[in-house]
Amino acid sequence: METFSIAQYRVLGLSCGGEPMTINIEWQDQHGNWHHYQSKQNQADAYRVAQRRVESTKKRHRLVDDDGRLIDLID
Image 1 (cartoon, rainbow, N blue to C red):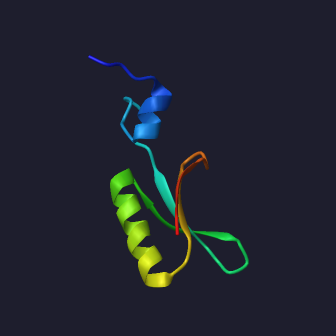
Image 2 (tube, rainbow, N blue to C red):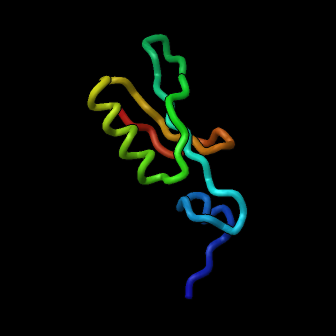
């Protein structure tokens, strides 16, 4: 059985026994400023929501964790 470090669990979006990972969805305005849209506990769901918003609003979105680290940029 393969073992993962706590950092790898966080990157994979898996629970490591502590608090669940919060994923924040943010969107970028025409001036380059980022605005909070929504928070999710599930990374796959957050990606789907952001992808749909990109298609409907034509604005850049990003997923960041609760520490502000970039997970994904969608445009």
